[in-house]
Amino acid sequence: MKKRALISSCLLGVNCRYDGGNNGLPCEKLKELKEKYELIPVCPECYGGLTTPRTPSERREGKVVSRLGEDVTEEFSRGAEAALYLAELFGAELAILKENSPSCGSGTIYDGSFSGKLTEGDGVTAELLKKHGITVIGEKSI
Image (cartoon, rainbow, N blue to C red; front, side, top):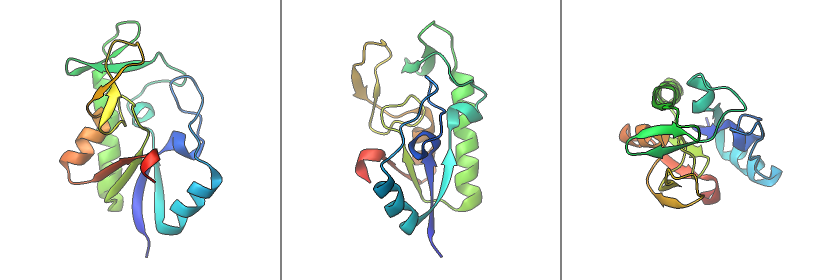
């Protein structure tokens, strides 16, 4: 039986990014992943009730704020809880998530100024998964 891993839906080519697009991985990378893991697609931002497309958001001072200044922390938290639920339900010990995202980023995220500057930190979902013992990696680590 293959191990199970959560994977950001946008990395699978699902058009769920904030701008309505995706970050689809090259077919070879997906083939390699599918040989090793049963992949469980997740989009915490959609699970939290945000629309696609949506206004870009970044983490700032413990909250998640949209470019328009709207506090969307609750939606991001709800989506993180849904991703954790799926990880636990399916016994996933690994999550392959979109780098730099305010929900999925692991190790680096945008700094909250909407200037494109990165800073150390985790997205809401990555942080929650790590707290529950799930290994989180970004797509470049595949």
